[in-house]
Image (cartoon, rainbow, N blue to C red):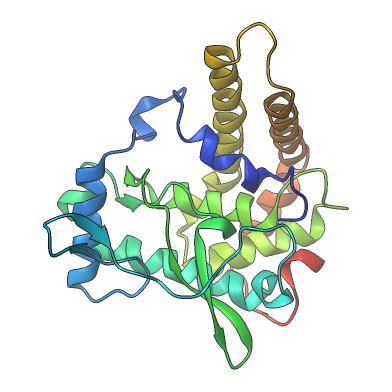
Length: 261
């Protein structure tokens, strides 16, 4: 992400506390995750670790070789529009593989619920690093397609006041929606869902601090809460600009870097 305090650094903590809407925020369920990974493995999908059983009967995950974008500073290909398009298409692939299955439950698909550069594995290709897989499936659960797409928009574009203007990010949100093939109904709800994730995140961080910090509090958590709240306010301020960019069908143009827009 652009800075250590960026939204992508806060997501993991927010996912592990109570959510304002428990029906759309599954708690970690190892049996569900194992079932999901087995399902994806049966289809030969290369974008998730294989669920294996070791010689001693212990359950293990297969190895995914490559580069995970943990650090703030990343090689330019990680932030390229080509990589953004690839991420969106990978999400579409595993969504389609789970649609209509028991893994989707009464929802549309199985969602990852923690998509970010730090849960994405990149490998070297002729044009540079490109995403090919996701890790961190602990919070996967039934959900709507737009939930994961909105999370990709927030986390990979670092939507918030660190962006100089909304024009470039709005175009890239549309790029992600187009690459995924998001339907009109979901496009109409995409900005609202980005805001839902940000609201969920800062409230979760605040609840976590209140439950465990004691009287002294946690300056790091306080800063994280304020950072995500500022991101929420920024997206809300520019919501109309984002909505206008998302609404029309667009032709993909993947020649620039996402973080330069």
